[in-house]
Length: 485
Image (cartoon, rainbow, N blue to C red; front, side, top):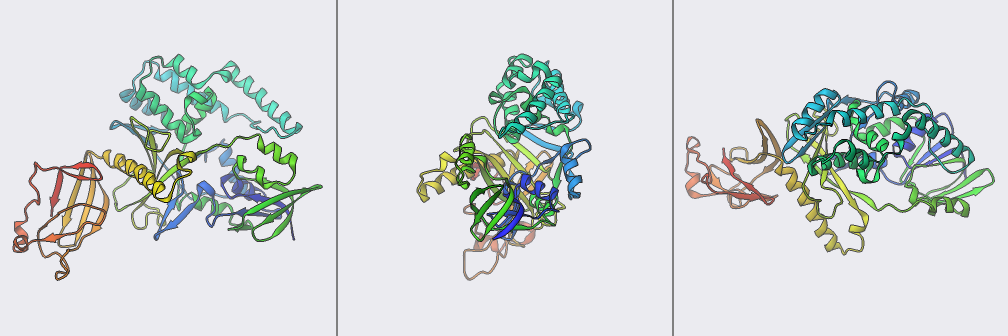
């Protein structure tokens, strides 16, 4: 049996920060997965790296707790600033969430005009700024001392915000933005789902302000992915990944932990696991009862990972807002995290993209394998269709000299290569295209079919494959620009 000062269960951002701050103690971070970071991990698949979830990193600025914690841990993260925190797209209308208030307000008014926009968003920004100046931020309810510290924090909140503390988010929206349009309300709720995992109907004004105001802070992209920040925090910490804690028993002033690999005796245990799943870890009935108070949340995420073969400059973060909810999801929007073009790890062979939206675990329970795959394909195709739909034009080009077909998306003058396919002939006697040919179908595995007529055409005599008046479909999207090079 090994004795420890601290046992930390879970290597998510909370557990990793605590470990980094206490690395001089005799501690171990236990992580049941191979990758460190939980929802903030970065994983490798098919030779490429992807962020498990969103890559937004906020709060690393002077006079903010995040910066103070990293300074105390002695870590300067490898990050680059995102000048545009997030680009929201709804009905092809764009609003860039930028740090400059007047610039943001100008864009907002051009898309979601309301005479009280300035009042509403200035209040949101000021509440957020005032909150982060508070000195006694604390909330817990497991004992007398915790209740006492929580009471001091509540008293400080009351002193700072007064009766505004009791206002609901929807109440304030209806008060300041009367007759708000459905699209504008959807714009607000889509951002709250990113930051607070819920919408304005379940929030206070204070919570909504903190959730909406993050782009008024400096927003960063972590080089190497969010998982790199976790790995840097735990660089000098004893970490045991692929080791799961299965039982915790209180013995006088210490805790006996049994894992899938060993047994430990720790003076303190810090849980960075889901709180509603923590009860099953403990043998002590009083501790189990405490954790049983927390109800199960079946809210989850549906995530699509994409590799984008492009060298065009993209933003780090986008959000696309739809009219209706995505199939098998509880949201009408999805968040797109894009790797930085200069990130040698994630962008080595093209952009690494994580697309995420909100679902519920209950939607995916009790399904056969075929039912599960069918639902997954429906949801994934719906997201990808909408992703592609936000390009004004989809252009497919074929280069018979290089055996390459490219699917490109165009917005205004910006042309982005979405996917590059290596095409080949269906005839076994011909190793590669020798000239013009024709496309019989467009799929994830396209084939090139040269004809006897086009094989004789000289390089100078290339013609379009299809007449301009014909329309074809790719992933249920109409394609009118089919061009042969």
